[in-house]
Length: 176
Image (cartoon, rainbow, N blue to C red; front, side, top):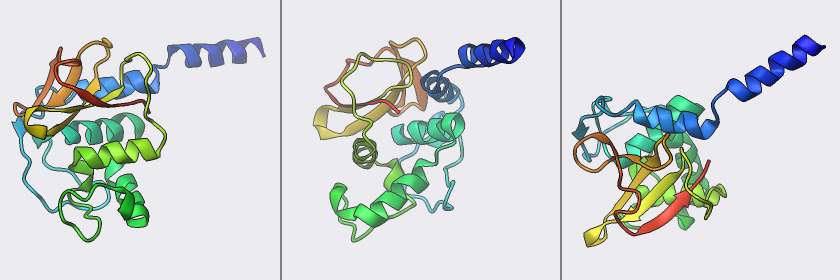
C-alpha cells in the first residue's frame, strides 16, 4: 500500500499540468510553422490541417490542443456550430458551418471557449489563451508560453515566441 501511494504521489506531482503541456505544444511550433497562410483550403474532417509549415494564429491554438490535450477543435467547434449556429458570429455571410475554416477564425474560437465556460479573469498562467483586437479591427489569438509571460502566436512570420501579451487591447482570456 505504501509503495502504491508513493508511486501515485510521484505520478501526480511529476506530471506536467495540462496548461504547461498546452504551452509546450504551442512552443514546439516555433521554427516549424514558418509561413503565414490565411488561404481557404479544403481540409479532411475530422483532424484536418494545413501542412505543418503553414498556418495562421488560430492554427497555433488548434495544433496545440490536438498535440497536448488530444482535443480536435475542428471537430468540437464544428459539432457545436451545427447545433448552435445562431450564437456564432455572422461575419462571413455563411448560411451554415464550414468544417474547412470555422476553427481557423478567432471570433469562432472565442465563442466556443466562452460557451465551454473557459473565460477567466484570473492572473495569466502558462497555457492560457489570449485574444486581442489589433489596429484596424483585426482579431488575433495566442497561447501564453510556459514562462507565463511570453506568448506563442502567428501574426505573419510563422509561429513566434514573443513578449507581446499586453501589446494590443485584450478582448478574451481563456483557460482550458
